Image (tube, rainbow, N blue to C red; front, top):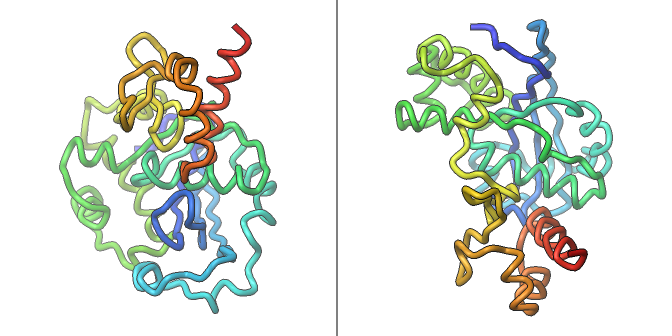
Length: 255
């Protein structure tokens, strides 16, 4: 089924040095940009992460320090990448929990102010887990009746994810071919920050989603416990999370 799009939809996948959003870095990004008229553009780029790639990560994606030593850093490609996805919605496999937070973090580290909060996010893994409870390779076999060759290469995973979403729309009548619907359906929480440390409650208020203040109104916590903000700023939290806490704190000052 061809996707019903109002904006271009970018399916993307990241290969990284690890799974720590704060400490790890991107080593490869691949995307398929699907336009409302059905046109598709595919691009893959290797990136020098500026830190060693652990052997356990290389064992998964096959990318070594030698492979990326002459590649550009993320900062060097950040502006061109931002322009390529400007005005696009985003889709991926486990993207809401990992790829989007990681990508947002890299843009912030590079000093590129790309407001991803205005985008719609479709997480094909979430749809899959709600419907079938399996992995990407199994999803590809189940929905597309194909074996996933070169699994854990960014391009193979990205193309498979795109094909799976098309097949999901064909298979499930209840899934609307609408990015707003798919974005809401594939989201577990109404996140304020990409890492889900802050979420919106049913009143549209930002509440803390971890630790001793879990479920508490973030603005009230920052007002009543000034040291908490300092702890957040000094802790190993994603830059995007710190940015959201800062916006809430500044808003409180202006009231």
